[in-house]
Image 1 (cartoon, rainbow, N blue to C red):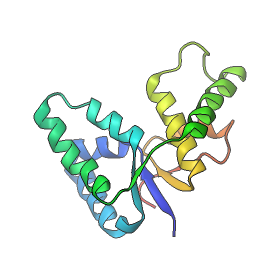
Image 2: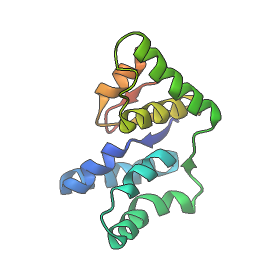
Image 3: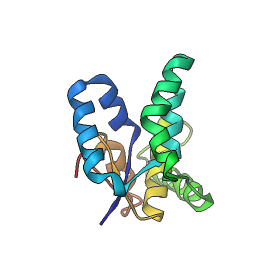
Image 4: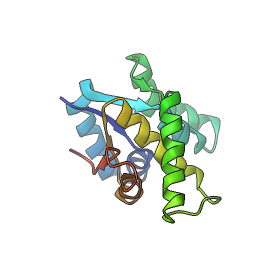
Length: 147
């Protein structure tokens, strides 16, 4: 069976909507043995906390369960190189501007590269960025929630 890692926007959607939160929780229960958390997503989530209490709550809800079972996917050096190459290729082909890469987009490149290299299926509400990435890195794809 496939292994899955979720993009940050899946969690953001769950934070904003009770229906999305329930859908995510139901899917997580069904897929628990196959779910991992990504270090990039952990960072993006927790950086968004507006105070210590929120940081602790989000950590407990979204990060700690994966930490407890040692399911944090961390990009290795090869993934960082691949992500930078994705950005370079997109700039070379004129699909993005070379000097104006948004940190969030680079994080998507890193997430896609890392998931690809380690054999994970990336689940995202943002297929647009991953379709762009797939133009130069065809094996780096994301699927919409919830497969």
